[in-house]
Image 1 (cartoon, rainbow, N blue to C red):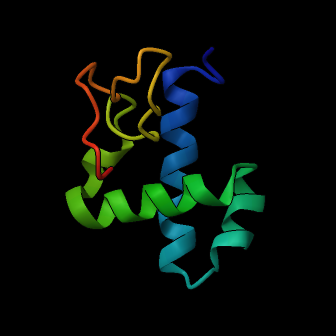
Image 2 (cartoon, helix red, strand yellow):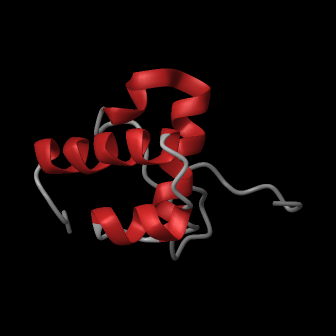
Amino acid sequence: MRRGSTSSVRHQRAMMLPASAGGNRVPVIAQLVQSDEVTVRDVIHRFNEMGLACLDSSVGGRARGPGPSGDGPEGRPRCANS
């Protein structure tokens, strides 16, 4: 289920970056953009890794856990040590 349109997700992510650059802590940013702290951390980490490409809705989000078949997020079997 989608939680917002592509543009609203991009806008939400874009608001996180200057808030972080301004020295705000993750809980404050999460409250500002009405998001989860884990999401804020993920976006900031992705920005540090890939720059503004992290704003694209096709990039980001958390990987899904194993499905009922035990496959990993890409449909490949998960490694025993992961």
